[in-house]
Image 1 (cartoon, helix red, strand yellow):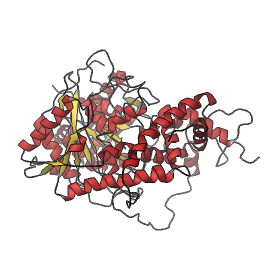
Image 2 (spheres, rainbow over the protein chains, first blue to last red):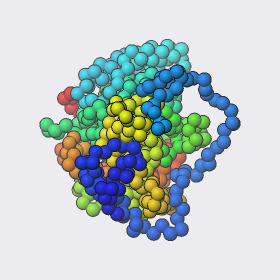
Image 3 (cartoon, rainbow over the protein chains, first blue to last red):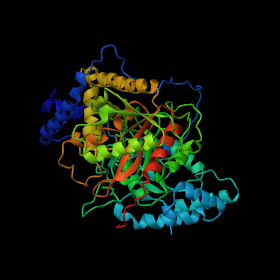
Image 4 (tube, rainbow over the protein chains, first blue to last red):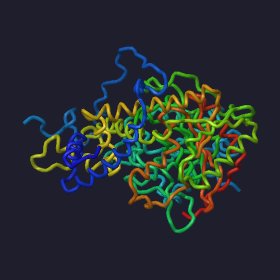
Length: 95
Length: 493
């Protein structure tokens, strides 16, 4: 499977990483190379094999449904690039 | 005379308990070495005041007779661990300025046992790399040198490896997703163990690939690895994948007796074009274990060949999901926005500026293999292959094999910049012997065994049964004693 420029553009968009138009051909080539390497997996007979979900047999345990932390808005916001009045601030979302 | 910063954990512990040295002395010696070691670019955030404060507290504890093994031991901490109030940015620009409001479980446990933090250590950005060349801080440099070239300490825990090998600390923490503890340990002549998935809590580690990541110690000896791993291990309710199993006394497991144990030699690890030196090292290591009374058994792990391609589907897929949180909203870098830029532009510009090239590449590969229409063909297929890789190991261990011996890396340390023009796949091949262990969730340890013709360290890897770090460490201990690796890099920095 090789990746064309349109696909590269779409992947960058999905990943929310800005890639300039001029860089798309190189990106497409790079991604194609890596996907080519992955094609080897098609040689393996995986008929009837379940995709692995957990590498060690463990089941996720439930904890009690109680509040264990909270009321620390200052700590939560401390590292924010832009925080105002107890909220994270972002550019306008609605048109 | 051995300088205090050259001590092993075990020697320092014994000397501290006898009152021959103080934690403050040890810490001062390491801080001096750390500053003199700036040329290696191993430390990226130094915390000397904190270190001395912790050392004084450790001294008080030792005096009071309440001293766990790690009490007063000066450590370097990989930048991937969140440390409260201290920069923790996984060597990424996108986490510039981030100072966590919390402490990772591993560092909490180490500090509770009295260990001292000297500073944060260099690494590949988000642990994605095998040469420490993707770091936003610049390359860490291997203290081992054979000519004018600066060599890589390996990656991703390159700063940890360089710091331990150059005695800029007594030991360091590392993390390993595809070989990031074992490969740098091999390149720098030190010991590094990746424990069984779930042995050590991942809480407070900057996540790369959650089903593969494990933290572990990087040390000057197998005994030190046993001591430090014990302090790092154990169940943590804050990590739902951490195992609720008792932590054995790993040091007590170092009996040096492996008579009658069965060591598997997997034929699939004899790669085409393997350097003769690596082949010989492997044969030598096999002979050492045989001489110690172990039985050598040829084994087969038929799906080995598919481990790397499966890894390079699964790890980027998980990374693309984990790294979605870096959006310029809650922490770290946010791009300057132009007029009319909305939230999408903020995300896209922030991530383009904040992530380095390799991270962007892996996030995009991960995005692609998880996208509609390709999920089954790539991601689910890779997870099926992963199940087969694990089955290979399960069968071998079920047949009575106690541990497996393989090379740790396909070569000795290479020059920084030498892979710059190479295909990314060539760099990925560094992990060819280590990545299977992460996919199967097993414990693996890298032990320095010899020098190559240019006098650079070479290592072997031993792979253990799930949860059998104790047995694995004992095997590694026997290998270490037999190999008698004592070489140290000559100080040039």
